[in-house]
Length: 105
Image (cartoon, rainbow, N blue to C red; front, side, top):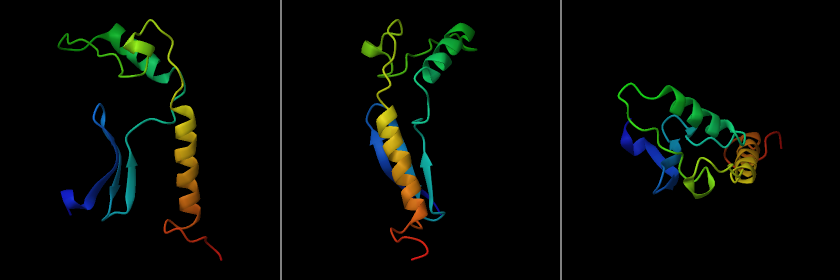
């Protein structure tokens, strides 16, 4: 096993890999959080800002979460519909046995 067993299926220049496939284990690994509610990431951000870091480093604003990357603005739930679509497609694939064929037919 090794690096050649992993294929990046979704990625962004800003955030890096979002979905990877392990060919050897036949596992998909979703790194993004489509399941997050509107305020989940904001809550984590403000919790971390309040707690600070052990080294005193600045807590970075989540990229593209708050409009204009300004944490004083309420976030928009821009990932809800794509997330529902992603998980719906994933469940359909699992129900078909992962290879596109319907099970039990």
